[in-house]
Length: 210
Image 1 (cartoon, rainbow, N blue to C red):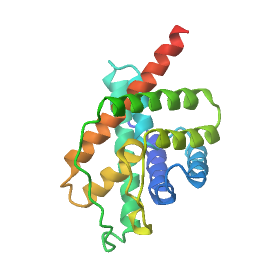
Image 2 (cartoon, rainbow, N blue to C red):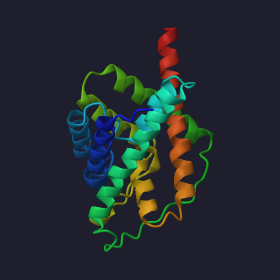
Image 3 (spheres, one colour):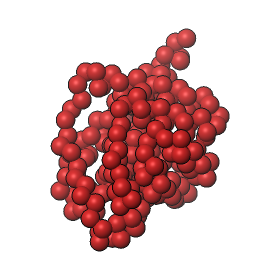
Image 4 (cartoon, rainbow, N blue to C red):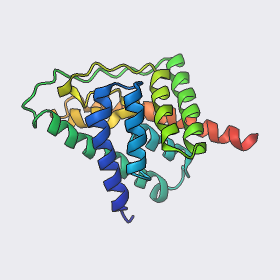
């Protein structure tokens, strides 16, 4: 598989900005929506958020490892790199203690799963139909609100984020902290991503039937 270096650079840059600015503002805020719109315009073609990469995976050819899973997997890794760079800078390479710790993974209940699937379906419909980064920027804030995402963030804690939308930030923070909680973070990162991706797939199938 030939790596698309332009795509990787865009993912790294976009994830850096998200970890550096958006998380500190708080998801669901007007400022965060504006920054997300700006990021998608500046880094054209980048997914930026892991949840969107998962949606691309689930709505692509699920049998195509080389054309779907591997390129999108590389995007997920690039997002972690970008978030890790922001985390390292924000914490002065570990000299500022954030007090952050990953939460133990708990598989979502039925309503939690249905909420993530519905959120994925709604966001994907808006994101793929609206020819505007501004619309996607505000839609992703609505997605965060639907999924009940909350953030308790200080200036030093810019990488602390709910896995569902900015999993790259939490994954990066865990790796930089020695990787002790990486299993819990990875499970949430994958499960939440797959559920939102399933929602996107449902939206595509419904659209095909109507």
